[in-house]
Length: 434
Ligand code: TTP
Ligand code: MG
Image (cartoon, rainbow, N blue to C red; front, side, top):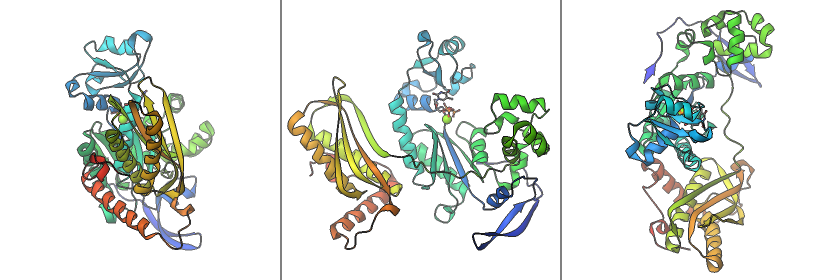
């Protein structure tokens, strides 16, 4: 773990600010910040973690084929069809290959590289597994792209330990459960956390504490500021501003004059201030799992085992996100790639494994009775999601249902502690069950 910079002198002042009628002690930093709100939010002492998987597509390819270990990999489009590089492994980067470069150029630079096609579905599957792990640490997760996410772990310390320790645990769990490495940044806000995760790639863990912000930021080039693209960087250089330190010292009026409101934003970022909250992915409309089989499957016991396992994972994900689903969908793909879906609406929204399973199992049985054929893909999705707050509690709770909830809780605890494969229901190890 790396803490950056020496202890600088603290320039802060404690004051009291009235927020919605309650007095909160707030530390206001003595900076020339145009908007007072920034210092208010800053005083609230958040801990944000940014997780970014290392050489993601290439790492997944290596995971699935250990013979690729140590070899330079280029994952992307066909060099003959003007394809571009999606990921260059670190071995290939040593030869000057990088993302978004024409594959033909990359192959010229590193002729002995293994060129692999993008397998989007597989990367999404692993991405989901990473999110599953992150959800074990905080419900406040904002996925940014296929291989990175923010977590707000403020307030999790009592349960999980200090934020840097949580960052370390996240890395360990991703490595232990998935065999992949992630770079993690831990800091008081999103901008600094994202910057931190990028400072010691691969397999890094960088913590930026409030006291070290200037030491970390000042020497960095302005292009490291989140949101400063090539055009803005050019504009700043024209003002003779090349480093974040120089930007911090530039008069905010000058920045405002040159860049409008964005000038204020640059000024705040250069001072290490970013009050943007972590926004959990509220766009989630459904949660699903699917599996493409290496060899087509017709055997019902086997299909039931796969489907029950998927249902357990989906139900667990719902419970962790505080969500309930009103409908379930079964997805089936035949050998000739024809894909069909079958949906059912449940009597009430639920995240109980048993109830979701009954719904999806009924759909599978109905399909099997009339159309049973070998399958190359099987999947299930829970949709029409509702948060807990939108649901009415039943006046007289069904005793069987609360029993099932207790079973789910116990299984979730075991899974969280020992991993996905540590415990399974009767049906998932071959026995049929209705
Ligand atoms: P990145 O996190 O930017 O890159 P990376 O994970 O390959 O490498 P690093 O160790 O530096 O984080 O992007 C994540 C994935 O997104 C990457 O593996 C492939 C995909 N991607 C593209 O398809 N095209 C692109 O131009 C970039 C930058 C990424
Ligand atoms: Mg990455």
